[in-house]
Length: 541
Image 1: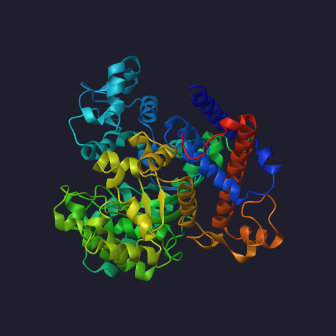
Image 2: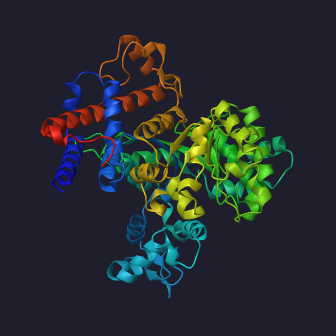
């Protein structure tokens, strides 16, 4: 009993040193060696069955980027309630829909929830996945129903959403985010509806451009720029007391609502291409919009009916503007949600016809026709999968060995963990990593590779730090030194100066060096403190 208690105390001491050790520990020790990485792995394995120690370890672990994150869904319900109350918005106490003032019965000022615990709790449950099991809905239906309920309060809150998301990302040791949002919104829909549908994509494109699309997108870019300025003020960027979220690089993926009428879908796809720099002569690109994605429930009637049409739209514009990045939700489906034949082609067609460089979810990949051939094709094409474990659990009921993550790993398909809708799902990146460790049996080295993979496949400008993005071998310009050192050589420094992506990757390596050096320092201290007969057994408790 004393032996077990001593080991527990030593494990707790390890985490205390790991979390609190100053950066000077890393600076005063030799460069990170393989033994530092291996020692972190051994400690990770020793606490695998202790969720509290594992959580503390993973919270401090560098995590790279979050590439699959819907901005409106990233905000926690409590923030939406606060913002709505400040605007005088209303709430239907029965349906729990937000609405604009004035409040007419039965609607109440949402501020009244601050004095009504039951109402406040009911609102949080209605616009998030908290207690969804008691809602009378499936996880799938409850999740997709939340967004319409708070839609009224997200007009004009982009700055607050960005600030909240950045601050949370920094607290999780993320350094980069790609956030999905819908530029232009109603103005773009109105234009598309006025133009109408045309089977000739080229002609439809010209009608939209002639109807004022460039002007609409210019206004959307200005709004996004203004939101960033306001975000920085909210985070107090540029002053000594700046929030750590100021250090998180945020970029945007233009959302396309695939459940809308086909003329609207085409207009939104075209808008995403243009904002991401398809043709600067037509529309000045917004440098922070780095790609596009199709969103909304994949299993709903319209997205299923128009799936092939949407792929043809993407193919048409990709052939004209191949430099624009495309990530696609695909395979967010399970048996019973749609007929069996509809599980057999969404991931493949998204890759082959839709030209997706990244697939979001990909849960039904083993239901696709010739799944092992598809996995090999994805590995060969270097198509990354954004793995959203919490989302797949609460929406689709897919968890543990049911999840195809192990098949992607076995096939050599690049993967990275992502949050999807961390506010609605009541999660964060640390808990995605925890799920990866506990439910998918991922090792520290696998999690580290996923963090690196997230930045390797980020839609951000510049050359990669890695000449091999799977083995993570450094480019020749920086090959003479360890990645992440404080003072790179002149040649390496010039290379980093010319690539935003490489600079982020270098920063991640520096964070790993410090994290693992602190782990080494803590491990050395523990081994010195432990009696010879009570040295920690790193293979497990």
